[in-house]
Image (cartoon, rainbow, N blue to C red; front, side):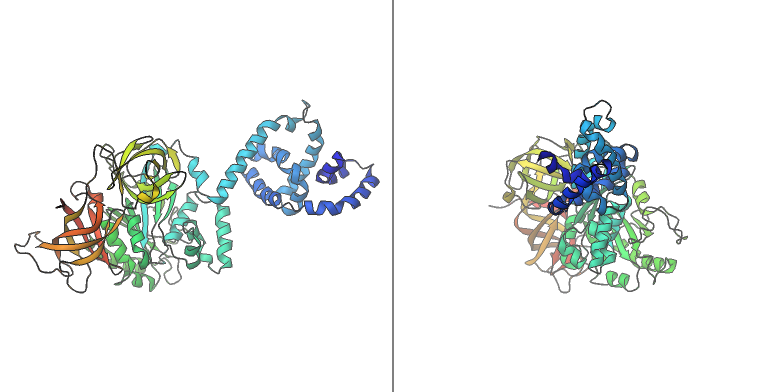
Length: 579
């Protein structure tokens, strides 16, 4: 019975080879066909074979094309033939010849059989890579480049702007252009988006990964992705544009070195984003307070029929934005760079556009590559504000290393709780490393602390140089937008580095003259919009902070209330607690 059991697999081929035994096979065929039927639709095999064959020829046409079928199509030769269109028809024919060779695999003459061992290993490796790819399309690409990674400078780019300006779409397009997302994955997204009548959203799905974000087309959490150019390694932080999720956007901006403000050139869209209550203004201001020094403004949707790459519209957007950005504190000559683009078509992101003759600068990705290097302090004290934490074979934290360097097995202290922890493993942009330098986005697996004991806004420091923590501090505040007056006793929400805490203004110390910087002699009873004051603030719980002079990243903050940004400020001095 044994040979008969194995028959259905390779039996049509046997039929071709041995013509004389035709009649006998026919009768067996009639008898066995019924049993064979349920065996043929082997779901796993059918699904796997096509993706496998697609992979094979594209990667190494010469070697793989002849060899692959040895392992792959022994089981599924019959099922593969009807499913595939081009590739597998060819390969099934090849397997017929190989079938003949298969029994004599150990003979020295069996060419393909001789290499049997190594092929199997390659196949298994390829299978694993493929499975990884389908879940997280970005991973294998990043893992392939660890030798170069340390040499390249890490730059964190945050995409900000009004809701529906096209931030996630531009992020998805950049990942596709730099080869971080496969064409196959994007085609799958495109099909799915079409089914939901949202075909222009498919690029943003590369960054908006959860179902709610995809259904509504609105980013909620800060999306993360990586891409590399010749000189630099970039982390994209895709911030939400909707006003309800501004706190998330502040968290994203606090990790960024460079902000890309996306504005829509489409008639009406730019105006709503820029008017009072639009997020273009608020985001630009928050980026500045979060410590972003350089701002690139991408005028998106230039391919829209209402715009059609018109220079007038581009200049109009520019004229309205520049005075505002100047007021926020950006220097128009040094810190700001405007460029037109189209996120959906990818125009002017990597290659220049023919239809846009008036723009002579570099496209977006080459421009990012040509920016001067950032100066970072690697020999300073360790400061890593925590953005997020979760459980995964221990406690894992995420954050951007602001200064100092961290290595594996190092002992650190978690402030403000003063827990001593040990670094078990270190991932920089999902690639495991032994040490990390400032500016890198890290995932650390820690020992000696439970996940419940950590909150976003806690800070990892080295034991020799702990960061300051406390509840009361004096700060200089600029009131940006507030209808009524602000008096001592006023409560708001404080956003400082990655920490969010309730805060109360306990006393107003003095007013500061905006032009001369002189301080008033008497204590003000209240402050109102557009005034600058020095005030004493007290938080509900203990937080980690530094003075702006000592460590700017942990000394600047924003105050928000009722979903609006009310004030921005910097910490001048920490006040010791009176027991």
